[in-house]
Amino acid sequence: MTSQNNPPSSRDHKKSLDALPVTGTGVPALVVSGFLGAGKTTLVRHLLEEAQAQGVRIAVVSNEFGELGIDQALLGNQDNYVELEGGCVCCKLSDELVTTLQRIREEVHPDRIVVETSGVALPFDTLLNFWREPVSEWIGECLSAVVVNAEQVAEGRDLEGTFEQQVSSADLLIVNKLDLVPSEQREQVYERVQHLAPGTPTVPAVHARVGTPVLFPPDPGKVSKREAKPPSHEPHTHEAFEAEECVIESGIAPETLVQRIRAGHALRAKGFVQTSEGLRLVQGVGQRVDLIEPSMNPPEHLLGRLVLIRRLS
Image (tube, rainbow, N blue to C red; front, side, top):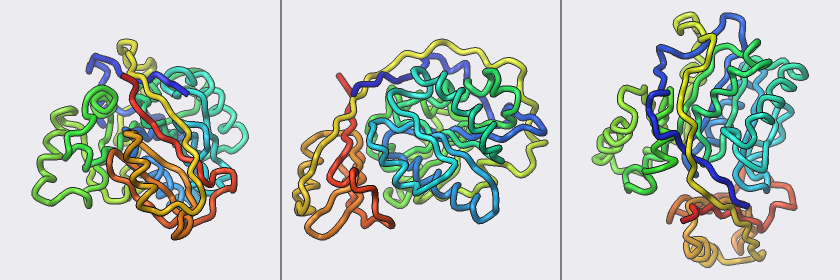
């Protein structure tokens, strides 16, 4: 499957936290974006856990690149979870996103909305859908949070195109995976990120742990009122990516699996594999491939299936 996705060349559409849209009685919404493997699903999982502990109804719309439904398995059985496939919510699936949001409003009546984009989508173009009717009639404060892989920045890997456009259009940047970067290099990471998005608030994170109040401020009155019309911006251009499914035999040795994934030269690899040492969740970002013992058993149809995502030249 090939999807095309990327960026406005202009920075004129960039918004600051002082200009976030909000209505006093509307449902607050969050767009979680970021490049492939930055930690978006992990962040959403934390938000779901906190909401459950607080007795807050939160609805999640996820736009996964690749059609296996791995993210849904990672988030567990959620009644208020909808996955959109076959394109990106920033463009091809924008109409479907609006329809889905309205249905969620009518059927679930959530206290909060989270839209998790694919790793190749653009947050600002996704955010514009909250100004479309009938969603604009009930959405309140909305924010685009972009998760950044600190290790990727430290390595200087894939920092142009999609990554640059995601970061430059964020309302809030979450610099994640700082534990993978030596302490003496972290300041350089912040400088690189700030160079792409001068003045954008930045939050450090490990394992994408960011408190709910940062993303859903408890006092929305401090944020200015939603604009009647969406900010103007230029139509975005696109990079092209492809998602390939790879079938892995049961009982494969972990070291063999890692070598095979690295040989595929993918930007991102994810899936569940039954290795010779047990069931493993595969999380590959660049040349880093982690084999993690999952906290739950995925649906049987996902076993032995990996999604490899590459940029098309």
